[in-house]
Image (cartoon, rainbow, N blue to C red; front, top):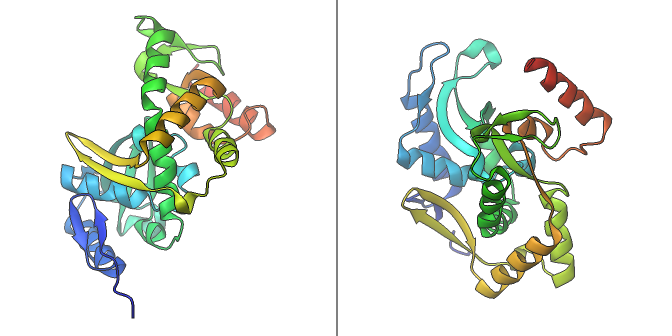
Length: 248
């Protein structure tokens, strides 16, 4: 029988998936939040849960712009069943959402999510540079979807062609498969995430992304609500209309 590979989450290592789940369940129940109270995780717990989030089967919808938008992770009573049990929550680009850690451990696509995160991280410098250039030192900028001005901290960089579509085209061009791409986990100095192990592949992807992508500034909260939806579709237009009413 093949020996089980240990699971590394943050700075911690677990002998099995079950051991990791038991640890997280214990941590979840350790806190005793009052109704509507939010208890932020300490740095060690934050790092663990960031790696757990990478395994979520619906990662692209939960985190449409990768993990960079995660501002905080906290414990709060769940809204289901009368709020009797603790639940993990996270704040993503200003929006608070709950998340099931059990779903994260039920997927077999965790490596794929880690690879996608690594590709996102590789072009982070491009998105940062784009935002800085677009704002040009100003404290406010225009949302490309609503054409409304917002403070710079409320704006996020969005791909006009969805990131998932761009990456799929790149993978097809290079005849790549997610399972064959090696990644490395990086942590320290406040940074937790994954990187592409192949530096030549990373350089090629960065060059391709700079040539093929079209970036735009969008209100961060609206961007999260839209996710990967077709921005010209009926559902997206309904979300945009509702968002505009909420800020009037």
